[in-house]
Each structure stands twice: as C-alpha cells, then as structure tokens.
Image (cartoon, one colour):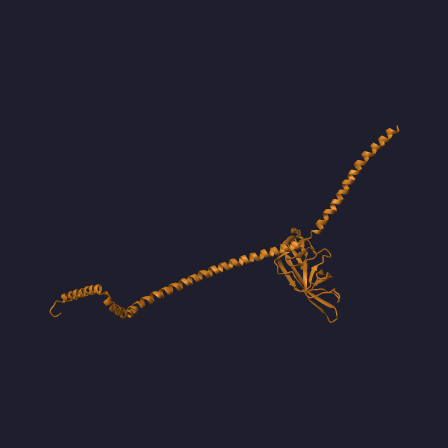
Length: 315
C-alpha cells in the first residue's frame, strides 16, 4: 500500500486508523464492560512485571536519596545531641559540686550545732603530711581572732589545734602528729585515756590503757574535755585493733574519724562555756556594790536623827 501512496499519506492513514481503533474500543468497553473485564485483568497481569521493572530504578533512586538524607539528618542530630549532652554534663558537674558544697556546709552547720560552740569556717591552703610533721595551713589568722591552742574540727570529728598564728594564716597540728596527744573517753564504758599520734594519717595509738581495760574493736572515742583544749563529747576516732605486743603490753590502734587533709573547709571553735560563766561572775560583783552603797547612805541619815531625839528627850 505504501507503494501507491505518497509518503505523507501513510502516516496520516496510520493516525486515523489508530484513532478509529481507540474509539471503537472505548465504545465496546462502555457497552460491554463486564465482557472485557477478563481481558483487562489479563493485560494488567502481563503488564505488571513491565511496570514494576520500569518503576524500580526510580524507586531505588528515591529510596537511596531518602536514606542518604535520613543518614545525614541522623548524623547532624547525633552531633547536636552529643553537644547538648556535653553541655548538660558540664552543667551537672557544676550543680553536683554546688550540691556537695551545700551538703558539706549543712554537715558543718550540724556539727557546730551538735558541739554547741561558736565556730568560724576556714579553708585549707597547704598540707604537710611527712612522717615527722602532720600539719595543715588555713586562710585565717590573728586578724580573724585565731589564737594558739584553738581547737579545729571538721564536719565529722576533731582535727587538731592551732600551733602558729600569723595575721592572715594559721598552722594546725593534726591529731596524728607524733607530738600530739588528746584526752579521750571510750563512749561505751566511759573509760578515760589519751590518744597519741603516730605520724600516720590514718592511725592513733592508746598507750596508757592497762591489760584489763574493757576496750573492743569498733568502740568510739570521744573527747573527754579534760584540759579545756577541746570541746567534750565530740568524736575523735574509732578503735580498729586490740592486741598484745611480745612483751605482753596492750597495743590499741584507732582510726581518726575526721577527714584529715581531705576536707577543704575546717572549723575553728570558740567555747561558749567561758562566756556563759562570765555573766554570773559580774552580776554578783555589782549587787554587793549597790547594797554597800545603799547602807552607808541610810545608816548615817538614821543615826544622827536618833541621837538628836535622844538629846531633846534628855533635856
């Protein structure tokens, strides 16, 4: 047919035939919809693999793009969360430090209330824990009223006493120093003795107890108050061992309860007992003075009057 028709007519005839076939199929499908349903299903089944094959590259590209986008988003989110986590951890460390400091101050306040003394807080500035010298330095001196021999405690127990004072700093001799001794009392039995330093930060010894002394491991040692240097009934140490040396003498060791050279803040103690006793001493001294001042005034005024009356009656 193409032999007898010009080249332009061939494409036109094909277009017309295609349109005619399409219109015919549309009319038949409209009038005989049910009869052509099976044909449509068959065509759909045959066309599904082809359609799936055609859509797969696009779906793969879309899935890959979304996966890469989600991965980058997760990386960014992870970096952001890590940064926030670090910032929060830093903030928590600050709050934790503040909480610990607050708790320490509460413990120290509670300790001062238990002791019943007037106290002043001070900060540790230097530590010397050689076997020959166990002492610390604090940032309070004579300008703050610190004096030699003043008792020093922490939130847990007695630490030592002031041995040197400068205007702005003071040296504290710890109870573990070999030159230090503190009068103590076994809380369970009331037995009094002396605890001596050994030059070791975690050890005291009780050398003056007899073999028959009722002392057990775990007994609490408190200050007896003898000598007036330390407040009484304040924790000092806890007995850790009770034994005998080769010579048969009793060897008793105790561990200090104060956190020596660990606590950054300590407390200087002023006893209130002396101030409470000073009030009654002054008052009686004033009362007799007032009575003695009243008596001489009244007696001379009365006696001359009586003598004058006697003289008139005699006359």
